[in-house]
Image 1 (cartoon, rainbow, N blue to C red):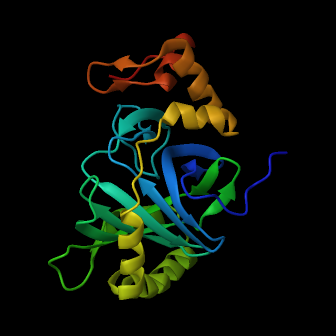
Image 2 (cartoon, rainbow, N blue to C red):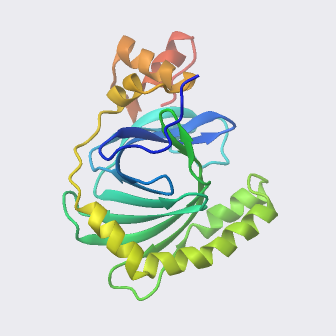
Length: 246
């Protein structure tokens, strides 16, 4: 069995994967900027291609939607630097202009605590966020209605929802605190090239559903579909006789 590193060295390119019932919901190649075993710093660089869940109609899916397939997308507009503490159900994010440390916004992303894996880290976004613009005095909620949808549909228990709201107090204090901000700004100054998704998939011991994506990419490559990227998953489905969604 492949071991799970107790910490990753700075500069390592790993996967930040989101999972539902063990299946990959999305997979982002990120660069490790800090890992002391307790606190992790990650960079998602503008221009990075990654795999995201799409619904049957070809649109990006929410975590309560079934079924889904993985589609190729690109992170654009900003660099995102993450600060995630072990055991916490949220991560702090600093969005900056590409190659800059000038803050565009500060952010709290509520998610399952990070789990170390041989390929990087696993988690799952819980659709709930806080956002703080540089000109604003305090953070504001984002997507509370989507979080409510998860609770209403039973994908997040009421007990878990209450626990997340309790953690929100600590998250609000952290995203406005000078210590965490200084840490994120320091990490944002670390230069990180755009990682190659397919190289990361090829060099890390990824789970089977991502190995299928890699095999399909090698067999078929990618091309533009009429309304969205034609993805490796589409190639697999088409070979099996399924209709590729428009």
